[in-house]
Length: 284
Image 1: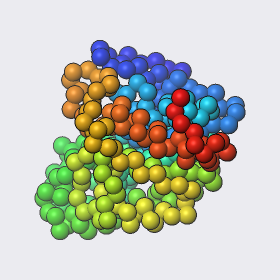
Image 2: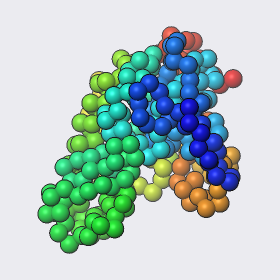
Image 3: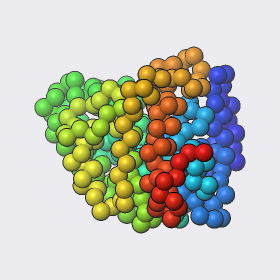
Image 4: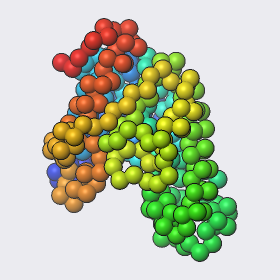
């Protein structure tokens, strides 16, 4: 197990590795010698700034180890490029997979970092040809990239978005195919899935993912659980979150402790049913 200095006002996430994976996940590491649940996803499921994120609450309610394999700024590319992490996820009794945004997958227009999927590495010749007027040298993050491209030329962005969304669906299908037969897909957001996602949202939900794309994944998962934060949970804001003063803006862009509690309430009966427990399981 590895320990990193979290800094003043921040949580210690007890970073750990599982098996042969090179990625750092939230710890402490769980004992996986018996039946366990695996959670895959990005910063929201990792529980950045939250002492007891929904995977920990799920573990408490189920009485089973829950390996939090979510990673900060991760998407499906992290797992598909990491056989060690996939092996751990595939060995779970149930896999819980957070829906993450389209911006974090490598595609015909740009590549992302293998583990930090929010990092923009390089534009492909196709993207340079589509946007010859854009200087990519000062762009380092995928959300910044898409914001710049949409502002520069909305019509060209629409063409790019179609390819990004198709790539995301294919990548999610590939990931779900590698997971156990019992799989829960989680939509964690401040709004329900839109009918059509044409522009980035402002909340903490997955960027540019819509109900059509989720429908294209049908048959790859056992349950789809939509966790849409209630007004009361959203009003709690950063209450119960732990972060340095300098990271206030980042904290407000992520689900807080109250949203994590609601996510756990929704997920417990679904996951419990799949692992053969009493359907009406509740948080202790």
